[in-house]
Length: 481
Image (cartoon, rainbow, N blue to C red; front, side, top):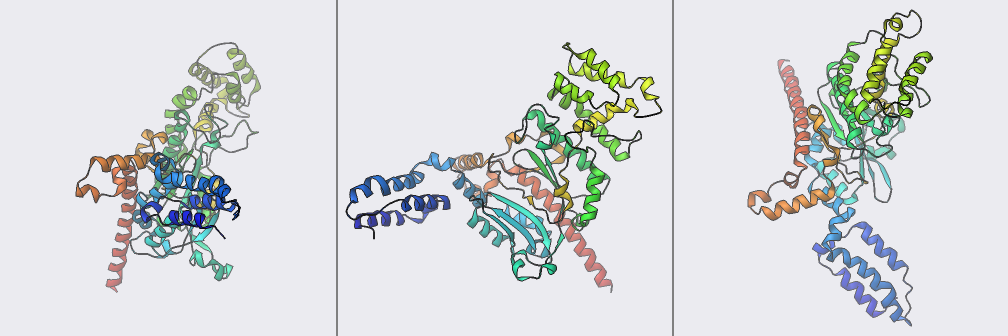
């Protein structure tokens, strides 16, 4: 049993007012519990208890209350603030529900949460936006994933016959990750990105967005920054959501151009006459190849890089000729690219009746070095989960914000708001604006998150408008009968 003094100290801490207690996270309480579990209480040695055990834990505990700087940098507190004050729950609900009144699109939708303890919770589902909000604010997940719409509520999965619990709908999604470009980018690798290689994501958005709209006729396409090194695409048209796995696989196959593992030098081999979709893509790729690949990535600047390109050429004699010409020179990347094109586009190669027409190789190199690279598993399986928009990446602390495809050239991943910048922006705004009208504003409208939520709201408004028009059309047909 605790001695009287220790009991009083604990009582004092537990008696803190509610406003102070709100600053504590579950991790804070775990930390105190862990410290207390190490205390060996002994009535005969109260001094040792007081000086070495409990006061140390109490000091750590109270420091998070008294130090504003510590609170501003505590990821747990920052995440709690984000979910309480910035997450756009209403618009988020309207998006996944495709209406303002709860229906199966939302109620039978799977959500998964990853907690700070690395606990992974699947098959969560909610009746409305308020229930979702309450659970997110309670659990404080470091990651939220969105899954499919099932034949029943995912939270009831254990009580349902497995054959009766099946995924039936989900947005057509694409995941484009910068790590898939590691074999061609020279500036970064792995999870790292910079302005030089981010251009690959810009090209991917432009190419895939054009194909989805012009080739498949999809209208409601949401692009989202992953928070660190890539982008996600959500195709939200009703007919896209109803696609089965085979149809999803067919779309991915249609879009894929770069194929083959790391051991293959040549990963693109297209016919002489391109499909109109690829002709359109090539027009986009050509705009970026020189500034992105030749200049920023410098793929012709060093021998190791330009030899990888020469290995794409199926004629070893041509490879050797160009290598001999380039070795030991300080020619620019642009001049080496022009030299390669001139050599391969000579009539003697273009007229060859057997094997590859070498004059087409420069075109295929452009595709191999700039065309989007897709993670097909994410797209082809309806029950595959994908990170939710407006998550916060645990390493960068950046919010997963929407990207406007019309202005994706201007998107800068390094200017995306973080938890810390949002909190500071809110504090600065509130300090400078004390009017009652300002107090009634949504907190995200007072920060740099405003423009991204504005993009999201416009997107969701388009979905709701279409849903309303469909309801009116159905009502009109019903009245006719």
